[in-house]
Length: 270
Image (cartoon, rainbow, N blue to C red; front, side, top):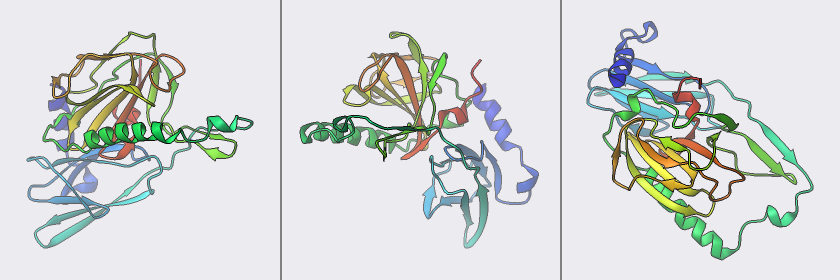
């Protein structure tokens, strides 16, 4: 029923798009967002010169990363004719913490042997996120895979001794080790890695058309690669594996390689 409700909402033609090829475009217009829309029959979509796949009914997804340009353009094409749709994103302010006096050894890259392992694990994650399946689960209303205290937010960053660290690309929910994590939407498991150097227990779920969820620092993964799961199914347990300072779920959302904020696709946590 959830997917029917979302499809019904998407089918409503916004007055701004009436008579045009873009029938709907839903989601928060901000950096880090996932937008889901629909075009008229026979219309193709591209963004930044790259083709965006549509479903048989014209539904599609596009994502914009943490530091995406605020002015974006969707190009719609039907035969030889084209339409351009401007999408204006709001700029976000991120939590930037500056930490001085950190021992230099803690901010230097790991030794080469460890870097090889990191690159191998990262390659597996990149391949899983490149999945472009025909599942239309990305159109459904997502739910929180875990509820609890938010201990980390998307886009935050620390600067150590003047050197910026990698931004945080997920939302952290703190709960005790062993707490069950569920699928935020229907999905197929595309990656299970039990002991990554940085992310520890790692799970990636494919929701279709380039949209995927990544869950990391898990103490246990309860599903196998290739398995189909339904929204709300148990898929993992909270942990503090990898480079984590305490037990929590780090949930990440991607549109292919674009790192998005999961908060943009779920209701406010109760």
